[in-house]
Image 1: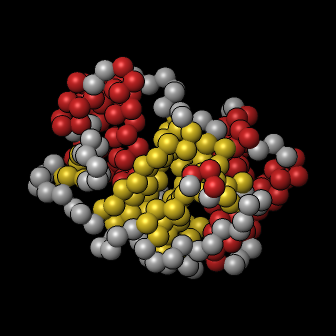
Image 2: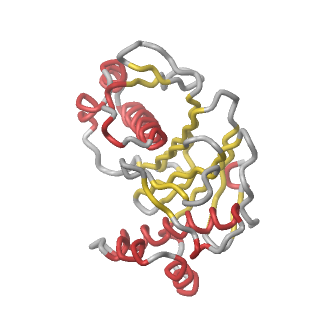
Length: 246
């Protein structure tokens, strides 16, 4: 494994880790030591041990990556949130990041000078796919409704993760209705279309992949120039490895 490097202009680095595969007591002690009191309290509030563990690893992942690219101590990093709750790094406005975690997996996206969003989902978890009628656009709902079997579940999570990544990149939370925009997930290049105007915004660039058979990740950034998404496996405070995804 190698140390994480700062993304070059025109790059988004996406780091994937599995909290349920990290159990070294010394490593976990290091994770806890780098967090601020509020992060520790948040992790400790979860009722299930697996959720407490995932929260700990997720926050350590963010601190480890940002400390490496900014050459600061992980415990010295300070974060705040905007009015809608999106976190940002205090004192280093050119570094943008976003975090997501689900069912033992965590993912963090990093880039420079552009808002970024990321989402990870476990497609094997129990989900009522009929909620597409409530949250998806009519176009997306029709796609999911017409599909059958495994294709229906695939389409649902393709769309869901893209919507979550976009909402998180914009940073306004659910003040943006999920059915106010659509994705053309069946096309070669993913595009977003806004329901009120019917227009596509080509500056929004999207990326999806499955790092494991039951995990799906989506990332997005808005940029006028083409973006290269680079993906890595990461164990916080150990290193990163691009090999599993190359």
